[in-house]
Image (cartoon, rainbow, N blue to C red; front, side, top):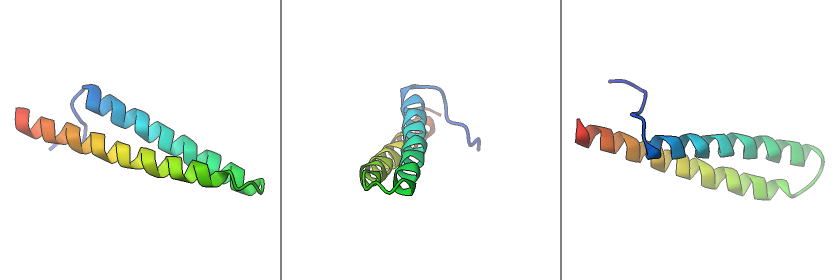
Length: 68
């Protein structure tokens, strides 16, 4: 079984969500290091985008198993 997902909109959206998650975690770290509590917003955004990433990856795998 291949770990790569088939090309399609769900895979692309999952990749975008992963990129947003990584960037928001980096922004949260920088924000907290500077002493700003704005990092809380970045942490919440990271959590949301992480959930979106898992959803779209799961959806792409589900479609892959249904279509063959």
